[in-house]
Picture 1 (cartoon, rainbow, N blue to C red):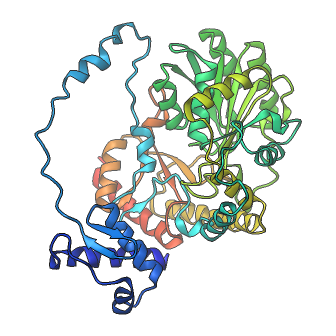
Picture 2 (picture 1 turned 90 degrees about the vertical axis):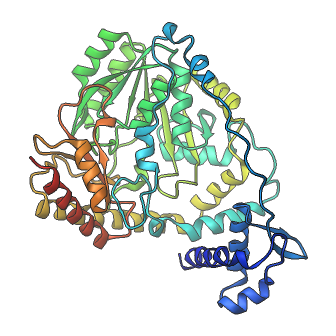
Length: 478
């Protein structure tokens, strides 16, 4: 973290001093910058690379760094209004509009302004990421023979085997495809399983990114309510009969956003209902590796208890590592596997081999179980801190379920509290939260917010964020 901060500070200082040099003028040597600013040669190199990427300097091997010459003035803006007609000309024939709404996804991807407490994040804070272990794994991977060659289209056999073992049951490496992140895997699955215009059953509430995938593919999300024990089987069966759907997407473990776990007595029921409907279950097992320290034994993935190929399983390393460590897996049995493979090859060819090799190095290192244990303990501590702070400062926020895994809490707002007004007031107060509306594919039963405790620096920031949220509530309450 210190190195990263030094790079930014040095880049800012050099950026401010660029006007001292004429276009094409040479900047001080790297050695001179090291001595002047008392930083490492690596910091100087990275700061100059940052300025070069911004087009402010030009680096020439063996010669040094030079101030870049001004760019030519931009020409007049073109007229792109014709695209509105082109993009919507055939819209009348579309069963579902093809426009893509990414707002529900961006809410957890966009970095908030400096000084804002990030309760809307969807990934581990940098202090929780295994940065050293990932860097070491990537370094070792880059030196492997053939590491920069073309990998097998389905993924490295050893990595497929590791994913198959982590899923368990009778799943084999031959039934696993390595994919580029869980979002990509879900996209491939929905494209493979349902044609445009078809209904797809989804949990309600559910992950907004999945709703965005479905709508972008021209599918019609149909909500099936969940409770703390997961999807309700009777309502699932009703939804299959009413819609004729052939796909149900679910998160049986630490569901997003409720944090619920599919109850043991419902697991077999869900598979039976889907099998009788001739439908697939897409199992998004996204946070199995973010279990909390006080959790009991975890249930196996649905795919581990599915001999008939009902389940298409998605799992990923991203949530437990870094948003940029996009390595995941699709597992399926039967003819659907070939369709999944074909779509992935057409869309992306393959996951870059160095990243797959780095994943193998990471999960095979002693640092991996140590990292998981540390994250497990820290997430429990953060969950408890946030829960206590909410009970103290916002007792009228209903928290029906405290999860033992994942990275967030799902809260029902007091009656009469408007989500949009609270979200805006919270940002003004210095805390970014996620409104509940994007998690529902139809009208929500009540107002909610989701608060993440993984993307912040620690317990003190959590407590401060809740205090800021209390001030925002006081501003918007009737």
